[in-house]
Image 1 (cartoon, rainbow, N blue to C red):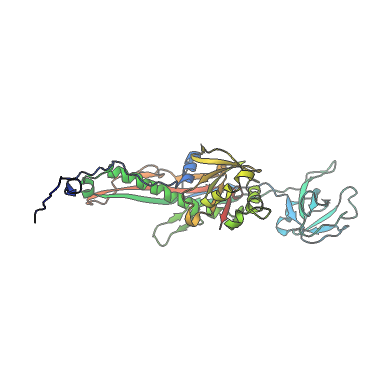
Image 2 (cartoon, rainbow, N blue to C red):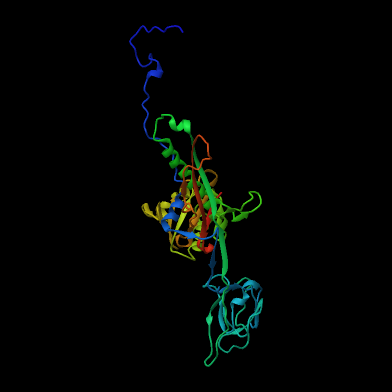
Length: 401
């Protein structure tokens, strides 16, 4: 090998680079977007153990008190057609108010004087209870049951009761491994200990995968064929929420006036969202919604300073119907930047399967699970958990397309 002669003072650009000691920090700066705030929230609200991979819960509602008139009804009529699916909500001697477009519209009070059938109510006017209706009712009018009016000396009224519904979900098994060869363990490296670092990093990836499942998973399922053993998935928020759901173009949502986002879409959604459940709800939101509401903020919104509550940092937005806690979600970007999920904190629960011989199946780190003879280390994170959500009407979804 020829000798290199240096004819000037030795400087850093002349010395053999292999001789220079690299100034490397001991820390590895891992990029950690805010990827699992929903999981943090569920942890803060308290987890609940289940004793089987299928966990069940029962829901119920109060009796509905509104239905619709299905045809034009003339004054003096003694029967009206109603929506078949809700006709049975009425009973004898109920007082009903008919309204075409709200409480200020011209309306008629009627009283039922016979047991309702599947699609027809026999009715009469109040007072003398003769002569049929005193005012015509339009097709599509809302019929609201005010209450029952019984005469003196009468017996018990007819009974009505809602039937409870059974709902369920499954736990899903999540696994991630930390794998380091023996040679790598024996090699001196910059940065912190590789085993500790990789455990920390893979543990976070494990949590992110659970977060994705709780947000995006389709409806629950169980597969007993392809894997040879049962493989279950837990239903996520997207598969649960269907009623209080609004989809609107982002440009329209940013608009102003009666057809713009605030009046045309935001307030109607808030009215539906807060009709049931808690007066405070959490919105896990994407970037598009934050951008949109920022254009309304000066004149239309009451936004409070950020606080940490339920284990996540949020800012409060006070609406005429209730308070929303906005949490910007790190997974609701790109394709999902227009997705926004509204959750009632009192009616959602993290469920995990109880302990086996190795301990709890909730975010467990099993060490040294490598095969005999493997030259290296294998650790494994294991979680078997699922999402329980009650009363779908308490929650909501807004998609900005």
